Image 1 (cartoon, rainbow, N blue to C red):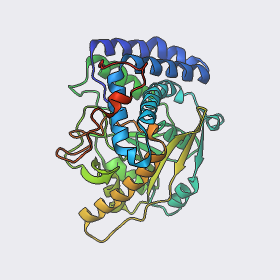
Image 2: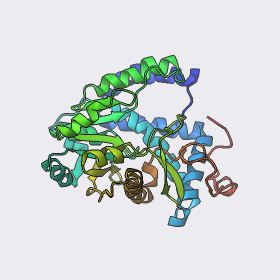
Image 3: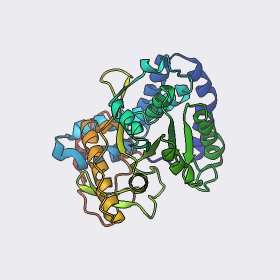
Image 4: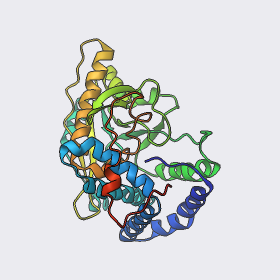
Length: 342
């Protein structure tokens, strides 16, 4: 989801990261989920323009899969609510222990990870901004698996506001440091990534890139995805190909009707290795994209990058698309906002 820093958002960040964070950290999990859902529902009412864009992109991509306009609107609202629920979860992740993490998340397909570790080359776990993004990392770490998260936390970026850098990002880093996992941030020296695999550890990397207003990197590659060409980072596939490490897609899915998650480890993809690195990387990313597609079609309200799924963001400029103009405008539920923006 795309958010623009502003004085109003900076004020909201100060409230969220100080009194609200303190309260949620001390409160039961049920209170955290209630507050996240409440904030999300309010946001949907206040910012219908964002919900409209997300719903339009969903419907454009998935109407061939039977996603109706009204369902797209419902999924868009659920997605926005999920975004704020995830904020509340994040405040509490560092309070989890090996004894109680199972109350919140279960892991399925972990045998694929254990088989990969038995090979001695570690594994590259490729995830999306899908469901609750950091529960897989926390669950693996608490269950004793050696895991490192590769992320993006540029606290000096000039396009972030002072509050975003010095409050939002700084406190996120502080909480993440308490996880039973290591972190490597993009822009730092990348040798630790290879060292992790050489030490037979797990490396978690987002396979759908960086969201928000930041453009994908210049080395991103266009791959067929949901009927379009979407830009994917080549890093996970290149890293696995150059080290011989298995490449395992990972997904975090919310169980129906309750705030409990299943972390699903897919079997390692069959990596193409013909000696032509460029073609091999393209083929292997294509396999990852197909796995991503399957889960997005099943759970469209889980993927956080629907707003970015437009030309000039994740879609290369000049790509063909269906416009969807007018369709969602006419079918919008009567009580749901006007053309107001964020």
